[in-house]
Length: 419
Image (tube, rainbow, N blue to C red):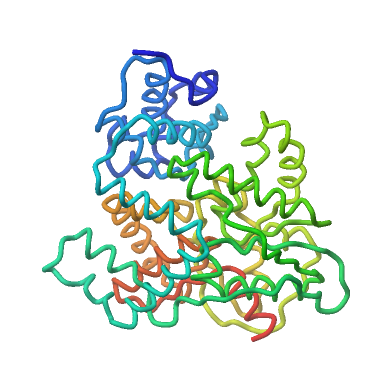
C-alpha cells in the first residue's frame, strides 16, 4: 500500500478514542458498530492515509454512512475537527473508488441539478407536478419497494413549495441601521422562495438595507459533501468575488448547511494566496439570520401567534455554527407563542444535505426517530433553520398523517411583523 495525503495527518492524533462521542453519533446509536462511530471512522481514515489498506466496498460503506452532522464535535473534549477529516476523505473516495453505475448516476444527477439554477427550477417543476398528480400517496403503497416509497414520501404537500426571484435591493423600513447582503442560494429560490421573501421582510423591519446580487451562485456545500471538491471551490471563489465587491455589515444566510460551508471559506482557502485574505474578510461577516437578528436591537414583533412550537436544531446550525439559543430567543419574542423543548432536538433528521437521497435506509430510520419526538412534544408547529430539514420533516409528518406544520424561523417572524 502507498501513503496518501487527503488531510493533515496530525489531525488524526487529536482523537484519543475516549468514546464520549459514541452516544451522540446517530449512526452508531442506530447500528451499534464501531466502524460506524466517529472514532471508528477516524481509525479507518488514518489507515487509508497510512496505506495500511485500500478502498473497498465495506470501507466506503462505513464512510458513506456518516451524516456529516458533526454532533461528535460538540461532544468531543479534545476538540477533534471531525468535519475536516470526513470532508477530506470524500474527494479521495470519488477519485479512487469506482462506484456501481446506479450510484454514479445518482450522484451525477445530484451534483448537476442542485448547484444549477436551471436544474433547480426543473426539479421544482417535477416536485410540483408529482404533488399535483398525488404521487405522494404511493408512499403508503405496500406494493412498492420500501426505498421507492420513501422517495415518493418526500414529495411535499400541495402549496408547500414556493418559488421566488428577489430584487437586487430592498430599502430598510424606517431608519436604516445596517447594509446586509442575502445569500439567496440554489435550493431556497426554487423550493423556499417564500422563506427568502420572509427573510428580507424581517431584515427590513429591523433597519436593514438588503442587497441580493443576481451574480451570486451556489455556495458549494452539496458538492463538497459529495466529494466534488474542485467544483465546490470554483463555486466558492465565484461567491467570494461577488460579495467582496459590496460594502456590508453582514452577509446573511438562512440555510444552515450553506452557513456552515461559507463560514469555513477561510479554512478552505488558507493556502490560496489569491483568495485567502478575501475569504477571511468575508467569512468574518457571515451570519445566520437568527444569529444576526439576535446580535442587534431587535424590533419587537407585535402580532400574536397563538401556537405551541417545538424547535429542531439543524445539525449545521447547532453543531457546525454553534447557533442554538438565538433562534429560541427570537421565537420567545413573538407574542402568544409557547416554545416547548423537543427531545433530541439536535439529533439529525436524516436529511443531511443529500444524504436522504444517497443513504435512504438510514435517513428513513432517523426521520422516524425525529417524528416520534415531534409527536411526543404535542406541538402545533415544528420550527427549524434549514431547508433540507424542512423537506425531510414535512415528509415524515405527512406520511404519518399528523396535522403538525414545519416552518422556518423567519417565516414565523415575518408573520409576527406583518401578518
